[in-house]
Image (cartoon, rainbow, N blue to C red; front, side, top):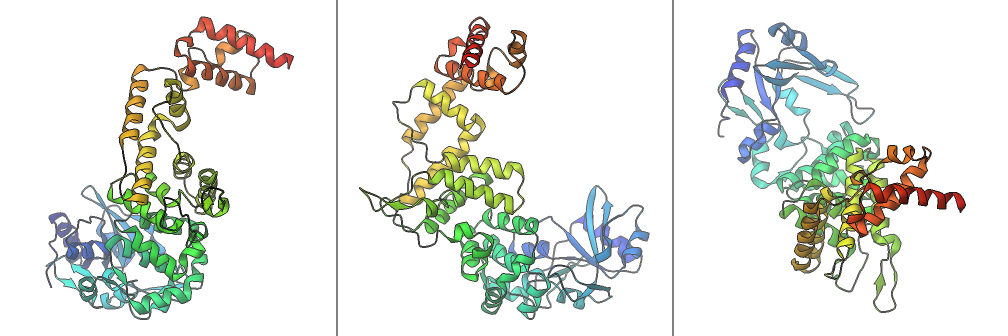
Length: 452
């Protein structure tokens, strides 16, 4: 087996351990990816030194996971996580071991890891790579295989089932048969895992180089029905018309297009979930087999439910749901300049490139190509409007809430309503964005509210 080429900074770090009578190994993904010829500088280290012994070797350390043997060591401008060799016993919560024992055996430590391709260790002294679980065989066969009994590994941490699917997407590997069968039998245990951990793995899978493979492993294992029932429900939902694929196949195809086109994480997530609302909105059509009126709004609503369930950030929820909500926009050259400005206002100038990318991915998933002429024309018109620096939002108006208060309009929700009405006029005719027009108009609007 080839040797790991140890960077000088890691040699220096390992030398500190050697000088103190201990060994240090690089383990996990960094070694795996080195063997695959890909970059990975996310280093994880394991040692026969106990956490207390590690702390005596360095002037400063951080107890990031001291209970489980992990100490973070600042070293020459980098932060290195070092974990003591350990054995683990009993996982009553299917996540954390009930008992951790520090040991001096690398062989025993590697046994507790998840998959054979993640159980390599590189000696940072001479670069020799230790492979005690035939990980190299599985790398060559492009297989994800659990170490030992897969049911034991998945009982220890149910998230490992989702990680198997994620690695299949990341590496374009298959999941070994007995490992996959164990996933199917134990899929229900995924409910024991926290939403935050599930979200991280799911999003990493979707944003991997081969998401279709990972998603299919989720579907066939039963994990998708538990974790993403909204997406799973689209399997077999026929569309007809321009669509030859069911909703699920089309959605995954749109994600594949977004991935191959190098589009942003927002576009990729929106691509996968943009049609999940078609299940709830499908109806028999009069001039075609099925209609899905309003499915974009329903899809956005269902995605927001998913985002809440997975405890996503506000940005992950709002930016993606906005793309889903607006992905059915229909542009024609007959749009007036005011219509273009209203489109910019509704979507937001910063979101338009992503929205147009999503529209292209959607079209390519349907027919294999996209006639970009109309979208390019829309982009050109949007750029022209942005260059004019016309008012496109309330904050661009020549007056603000303080000006309205200054002419006698009381503080409160009325201020926002009046500014929004003024913006509608300015969007139609930008030359009206003047204080001498807007303030008297605001007073007339306020008087109309009082009289109504």
